[in-house]
Picture 1 (cartoon, rainbow, N blue to C red):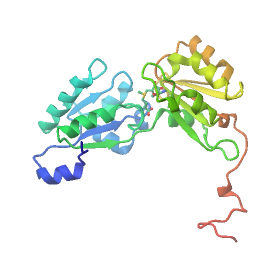
Picture 2: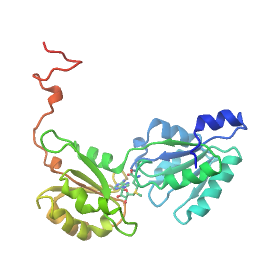
Picture 3: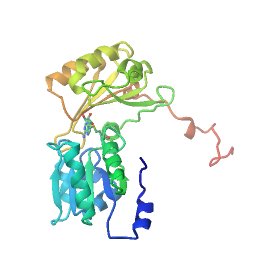
Picture 4: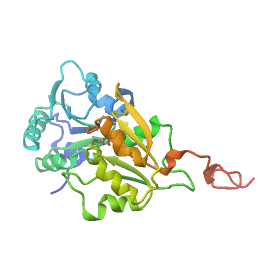
Length: 268
Ligand SMILES: C[S@@+](CC[C@H](N)C(=O)[O-])C[C@H]1O[C@@H](n2cnc3c(N)ncnc32)[C@H](O)[C@@H]1O
């Protein structure tokens, strides 16, 4: 199977006035966290097929009045694909909207493969992911020199499962800044696993619906992660940031150190 690029298909068909199906990352929720490109694609959309279980509804208000909008929370892949193909072949600007960034747990791969088999070109517009929005909401950097220099984006196994080498025990063993998606349902098990690798007072940000109007974020010691999540009955749209970087501190980077010369700031 070959993935067809936008430019090659446009050139070959010499414009029957069809447009690529555009996969857009909506960002975490707030419309002003969309990229400019994403907002432009939404304003041009004739058809919006959106993940209503995860995308903040405010984002969909950007589409023009004539735009057909289709929710996908009750549909299967087998139902979504014919919609994408049919509307694209009719010449519509089709936007397929997913939450956060398109590269993370977005299920765009299976859709792009099916469109490729149908020789339909695609465009992908990335978005701000939940971990970035959470770190920003906390005014935090997750890579503090001398403390932690790696960010792991992962999830607890759950129903979908993860490859054995990516089980939480392995991810946690790094002791890095760990961003856990899709894991609130398994928080008790997650906490038990994390406590095997991080000190029990490691800060954990619990972020629910970051940048939505009802955003709720708190930072607790790891030993409190499960209790606080359960008290709040968090199951969906919750991200965990487990990181020694959330302790703050004043470690500074070498980049701006007076004794560190480099190409743009040679030795004075
Ligand atoms: C199917 S995944 C998609 C992730 C998305 N592509 C991203 O880059 O953020 C859905 C999970 O992302 C996280 N998530 C997405 N948006 C969020 C938000 N606004 N606040 C907190 N967590 C969010 C939650 O862990 C949620 O269960």
